[in-house]
Amino acid sequence: MPIVNATKPFGEWQSFDIVFQAPRFDDSGKKTANAKFVKIIHNGKTIHENVEVSGPTRGGIELEKTTGPLRLQGDHGPVAYRNVRIRPKTAGTHTVFAGKPTNRPQARALVWKKSDTTLALCNGDKTVWQLVFDPQQPKIYFHPLATLDGEILTALSPADHPWHRGLWWSWKYINGLNYWEEDKKTGKSGGVNELIGATVEAHADYSASAVLKFSYHPPGQPAVMTETRTLTMSAPTIDGSYTIDWNSAFTVGDQPVKLERTPPTKAKNGVAWGGYAGLSLRFPPKIKGWSFLTSEGAKSAAEGNGNTAIWADFCGPVAGIAVFDHPANLRHPVPWYLNEEHPYFSPAL
Image (tube, one colour):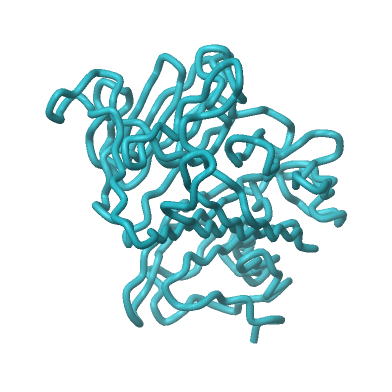
């Protein structure tokens, strides 16, 4: 039995971090030690620790041995898998997770830093991620998104597009009014993206959650649309990766709302730079040796821009950021906007 029931409701993404030790055999082939689940972390909570396994399951493909294939089995309803990573344990590697020594590959000294308008997860003196929910800012955003050792993967307000802010959301046009670009002198866009409520919580297991409420309206006028944005940030996993689940629900008022963007190349009166808006990521140009990769195998903007994909990944030499389009989203799988010059991408077309 698990130590605790950490399962989320049916239909939500679940996470497992599994540290597994294979059975041991001597030179004659005799087993000298059972296999062991050293630790299983389910949705950020430890559910098993040091559990021995005396033999293979009935669904096992082969007899016990030290190496073999990984079988993902789901036979009790629809099952989807994503972000499957396998890393061999390295002898002599010792790291810290939530203050406890383990055999994990990255050192950890995780700590929260929170103010009235920011929440940051830090590893020692390095920021892993930061959410900025300042109502005085034109947009709410994440910056930086970084690795545990401080390699920053996002860019904030670059000179060419100062309204680009790490990981953020913005509509382009609502009823013909521009909510995207901002005046470089005033820092304001034509339409107002107003934060009207924020509940942000940091948890003891180094996961976090936020519920943000927004009003979209012309300056000095009532809202034409509202948004409830629910963010769920996972605790870093064994290899230092983490996830941000982003759910936005939009509600219009009594009058119809028309959402538009600069038309992309394939649309009527389209232009080469058109199609951006919505959920967006801006990356720092200083990262060298990076590339795009989509679920359909596109490895460049030329191959992937304007084409549908379930996910897109910004791959760097040290780490990367991937965005997955949820199957319940409208027009799934969505066409992507990929820009190598900035670099930038968005599931927005």
